[in-house]
Image 1 (tube, rainbow, N blue to C red):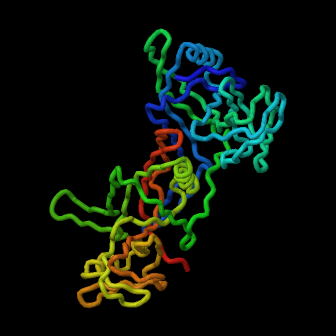
Image 2: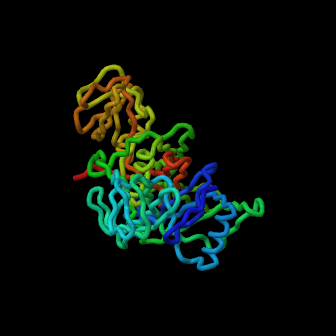
Image 3: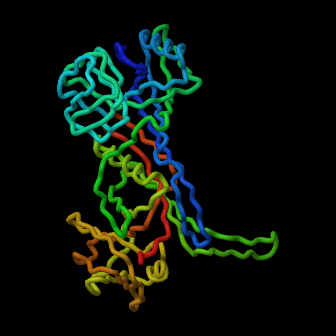
Length: 397
């Protein structure tokens, strides 16, 4: 329940009840053509994601009257919906008919054509950004009200409510509802937190560990053809002889920066469109005690030879040392060495690879779905799942 403020603009009175999470969905649309050998051609059909917000709200008598009047006036016109987790503050006072504002910390979401809501605790006003230079924000239209320095500046969406909205009257003056809002496509700049990603062979490396509060779910599958006449023996064949690994990993953004960085990663890759490297975070290869050379190591047993020799999925590893440093390296050869398996790599290891080194496969992945659902537990902490799958990869020429 929130206080109903005076407003300028069609600012929604519905605000989240934080006893339940606020859900934000981002959805791209990718056309994927898969060849017979498993290679993919992927094309992003949306340059920006469709966005949907969902939350539970509680309206008191004043809120009920305002929301009912808004819907009675017109229901299909978008509301200005403030974003609870994106906010900054006015650095100087704003007078009526002001065409520009100054903010304390210029956030990444403060961009041309984005919408803001100014809020001083007694009134709100919706504005739209024209240009941004440092902390100076020029507006497309001058302000109507006055706002003191320190007033809140929130990012906002232009979002439509559902065509049918179900409220439950808890009392004569208290209504609750679970609401879904669809952000009007093209109404938001959809900027995301800037990053300088680690790169390997032209693709980004994702090194954020999943949250083990929810155990990762791993699925192993094969493209298989089966010929069965319904009697007698059957014939099976795999034209790729390749195992595909799919995983669902849970992530927790422990603060606003970490939460926005995870969302930015998904938006940067446009859902399923772009591939990236990521370790499995498992001890996939057990290293023998005696190093072979600066660019080789042995793995006890011969299973690794038969499992990974010639693999076009499991041919890059990530080695992580106890001090936190790591290195990605491409496998160039897998050979039997008596009762062990020798792995040869393209580059020398910067540190010695010993049994204390955690060696994980680092396949090339893509998101297996174009949709990311983010659950904001508070206005700084978000939880989300990344559904990913391995891809065929080859060393660049």
